[in-house]
Length: 271
Image 1 (tube, rainbow, N blue to C red):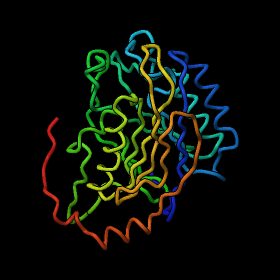
Image 2 (image 1 turned 180 degrees about the vertical axis):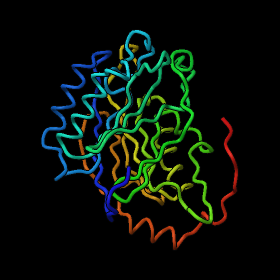
Image 3 (image 1 turned 60 degrees about the vertical axis):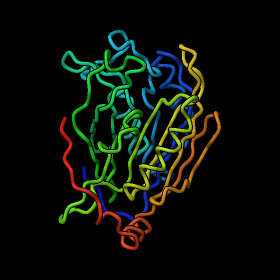
Image 4 (image 1 turned 135 degrees about the vertical axis):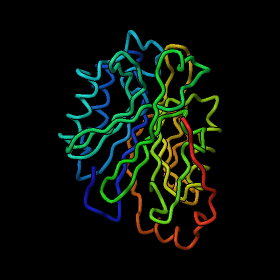
């Protein structure tokens, strides 16, 4: 999905609490939070992981069919109404399998990416199927890698693979999450590490509040630049909606000035 090349990308981070296993209430609350947010304000809206339900392992009971998902339809409607792209993940049933599926919706259509690394400490690997492909979206001159939560811990899967023809696969790594507060130091550190090693922007969007299992979420949603420096950092457990800019020229200038990619190791990832 290609768009005209631009020098800036405006990204809106939505950090919020989620109602447990109540998709209609969550969609309504998100519409309220997004009031006034459209293409005049932003190019891309990022919602937390499993924005419709919270991080539920009740996949058989809560997954929406990909063919007639109300939450997928809602994302598509939001993209058309606001004339911008929007992403979030949903528990999805597709041809008898269950996925924690990140949906990218924009006015031109839809792309999806299934979570690759399933959080076994919560039994996610027993309730959902693993994704098998990295998905990069070309949007307004930026290449954006789509990832979900636990994927952030696996640098080999996320590593840029430079070649003579294409030095960088992506310009920004997008990670939407339900990352619990007890591991907030790891979340913050990994967001910065992925930016440094891949010479790219990283946007991490997390939820706040407490889920039905008593797990607390601290938020800590961040935009990190290609040097690992936070440009937007909310180390607090309150909801917010904030828009920031990614600068394509600044990224290109730094990659030229500090071409660490030229010394990167070549490797292959086997599923």
